[in-house]
Image 1 (cartoon, rainbow, N blue to C red):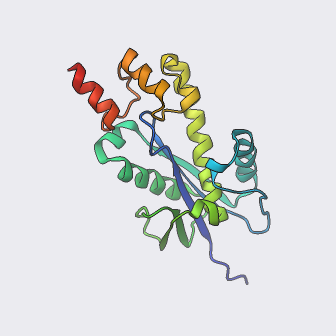
Image 2: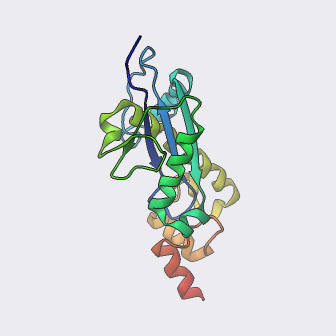
Length: 193
């Protein structure tokens, strides 16, 4: 009988952008099927992230991806919306973890023992895996938004406040996918009202 703790790693993607939902993933890795090359998603190329995401989906004991909407971000605030997305991801897991390890300073309320680990996405494989799934899922969602709103060029900046995005916001105004509680969007709405 193995006494290994079933740990699920949790991370989010998309706290900083001005548009689109925030995504979170929860991953329980299978120690009998290790995945080589797991790292913080931000330190991996897009091609490598996509390759690892499919490996994680094939080899993990369990994984889930969830999101919190733009409306939830604007209503709750980005931290609470991120924690909500994390909680949803943990609740969707097909295997119940015994502990939840989260990247950063805050843990979602899952009713399970939890641990916040600063830079966990660089030091804990399950959190790295969660960071990769959250990032690739959010990037895919932003590509779909790009098809609906090509004028903002979401495919290039994924909603982050780049010079190109801010210029497009000024030119085209605020879309339904923009976070109204974020300062550049809020200030633009105030100047136009």
